[in-house]
Image (cartoon, rainbow, N blue to C red; front, side, top):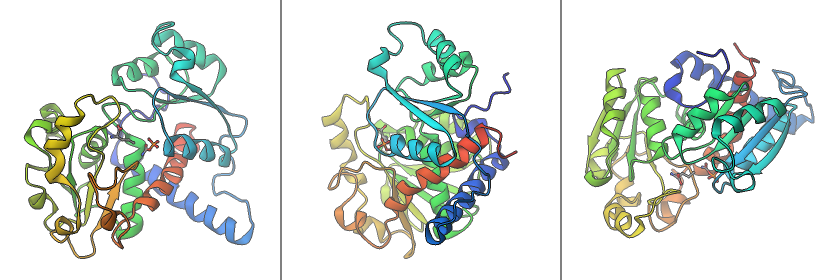
Length: 314
Ligand code: CP
Ligand code: NVA
């Protein structure tokens, strides 16, 4: 076990460490807002990434992850450099392990988006600098840190609340399941049986004490929820688009479904959204939608994660 502070999955952390990163994110967001109002520059952490260079590697497209990491790194005093997976022929031109060894000689951390989660683990195992998961086919932990931050901001502590997921059991759902094993909230998941979460994932979360309820009925999941979440029907790397559309149609977040939730429930979506498919315009643009705050919070949450990776917070 290395002492390097990788950020690969929420399941790797204690609730205390995750809360520390979230509290740091909230503090950095408040400071940034105050600085913008008053023209001040002082960060509560100073510039923990001063002199540090962080590589960002993208095997797949990205708007939020790419821009929010880039801005966050700069705001913490560091410098970023970007390469696409195709430029370096990631996993093809040389082994993932050798790629990790070489990159570690140049940069102080690696943030990477790649579909193959096992390759991410291999990269981290061979890197001598922190590695951050910017999305794999299996999980999207940075997104869920921003989601929890958004929940806390809008509704207070997540403990004791009810979160509903309706749609595909994808990478974002997996990271939410990891979160449910660390924070005491009820997590109700509605998916078509054919696209249900991996049984090992649910069994693991339950063994950790998570209160997870699976159903095929989106109305049952949404009933009484404080937050309703969905995501696209076809994730990066999915090939069975037609089948997914047919199976997932009943799981759309629309006004009728939302009426099952608490009247002050919030709606989240990691974006990009396919309006008219998994979520309607009326919900996306409605008063209960917090999707753009969620997108903004990627920036703040990742600054909290970066501060932790670089040891700027205990
Ligand atoms: N939510 C999210 O990760 O967006 P991008 O794919 O644009 O980075
Ligand atoms: N589940 C989506 C998330 C995109 C940010 C995907 O993997 O494509």
